[in-house]
Length: 376
Image 1 (cartoon, rainbow, N blue to C red):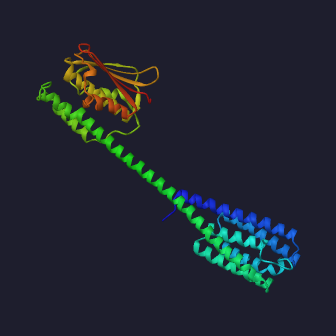
Image 2: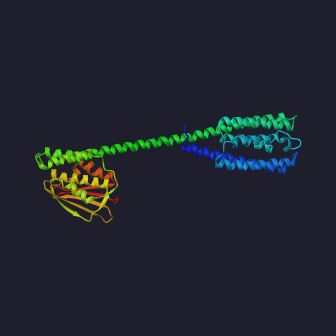
Image 3: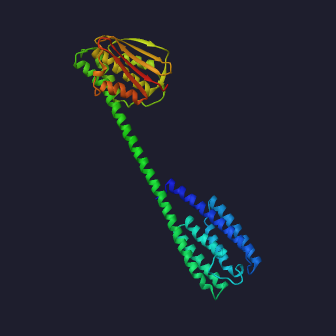
């Protein structure tokens, strides 16, 4: 399984941290020991310390930049060489019951390996280095080298504990990735569900505004089933129902689209327009559907054969479309919120585009449908 972003980032940070700490520990302990202690062979000791510090600095740089495959095996060989060189770099009468710079070097190396190499290579490298340390101790002090065995065993324990911590950290990063992935999947599922609901609502709104409204006008006798415009209107209704919802943000001429919409409603329409505002196609479609629903309601309920459509920008730059009539009117407070034409076709459709709809009416005083979109 490929690691996620959190696990990858955590692994990268751990690699850099372990390499940096290794470099600092080796540099401080080896140089301090070379200055403070009297080694068997001081010149050899300084050569070993300076050479290995230089190698450690380059090793750290290479790890930060992206290490080649041969880097770690060469490092293992050099660390083993430092262990064997205890014959020259240790004090004249060495003891192995305390901390020496070679022991500190070996300890930090076997710990750091567990954080930036695989488990198999880390275990093998640690084992080889511990054996080399004990071998160097045996060459340096054949009579007392066994005192180094507990320290060698503890280095193995250090390597195991270090590997365990690294595994726990990677698991934490993996769990974080899994949590993020679950949340992302939940967001994607919610977005898909919301899109489906929006499509269903748009389809139902289009069905209500077109075929249902036309059939209702015929069924209630508002228009004669033999009227010549009815066949053409039915064809337009089928075209609207079968068409995908408009989602484009391409700017279109709003007034022209509104005039085309109103031309198919059996009403005399008076137009009051200011300029030729252009809006995104999806917004124009919502305004046109709302205007058609409002004009259809005039035909069905108002008892008049004319209406006024105004298109303008208000003082804040918002696009305002109003459909007004002088018909019988109604009491908006007595209209059920479950009435599809008011709550969904008019109000909800504009809300989905970021706009709003307000209906003003009084019995005997006509009706005004105010639609507004402020995203212009």
